[in-house]
Structure formats: C-alpha cells, structure tokens
Image 1: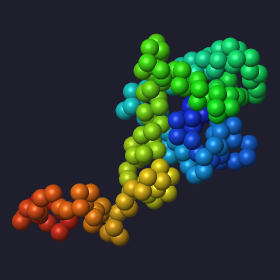
Image 2 (image 1 turned 180 degrees about the vertical axis):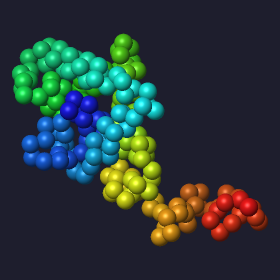
Image 3 (image 1 turned 60 degrees about the horizontal axis):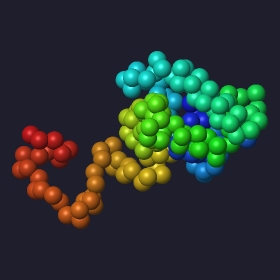
Length: 176
C-alpha cells in the first residue's frame, strides 16, 4: 500500500474504488499503479525487489517524522505515508529527492520505476500492454500495432524517411 501511494504520487491516477486509500485520486484515468508500477518493482531484473519492504518501512518512518514536524495527525488504520494527503505526499517526495538528501538515489530510483511502468510498460510486452488497455501507453498516444500485429509508423517523425529501404528487405521489414 505504501509503495502504491508512492507510485501514485509520481504519476497520479484515479481511485480503484471509493475506499481506496493508496491512490489519492487527484487525476482521472490510470496512473502509475494502474500501469503496473508494483509489478515492475517486484521483478528481479530491476534489482530492487528484495529491498521493497525496507523501502516501504523507511518511507513510512519519513512520513511519521514529516507529520510530527508539521503537527499533522495521521490515521493509524493505514501506513503513515498513505495517511498523508496527496499534497503532503508530494512535498515529502520532493524533500527525499532533493539534491543533497542522503537517500536521494533510492527515492529517485523508485520514482523512475513508477514512470517506466506508466510510459513504457517495461514489465510486459507491448502487445500484452495494448491487449490489457495499458493506461500509460494509451495516455501518451503510443502507436498501436497494425491489424497483423506489426508496428508500422506511416508518418515519419521527421516528416520524411531517413533512409531508403535496403533492396533485400522483406515485406515484414526484416533483412533477407
């Protein structure tokens, strides 16, 4: 729940239900959590899966300190970071990611994974992401594959082809 709240602070989305406490609900559509941030963080290839429990505990410790310094009352029914309002979550994340903070690299890394889940669906194939209605890819306008499942881009980003196709290129785009 704490890591979901952190990911939602980085790329906000709408609540999954009226009683959802991890998602602050400050944006419409799916954010980092709906895009699979937790699934991405839990993958061993990212190198931080084993540290997630410790990161959540540390983030909650920071939230408790933050609340105490500001005289905020936190609801004991949820972890401390989750109990913060979105504005306070964002302010705490800004403190943790500020140059010179001793743990900056940890929190920036966690934020990057949240962004990656949203803007690239790094934890799944692009085909699977589209089949699942991945909110991040849809929000940024990522081009869908053609009916045959291949990705083609009929409009070139520079307004023209950058090079001629090699004469031995097959119809699927592979070199012969």
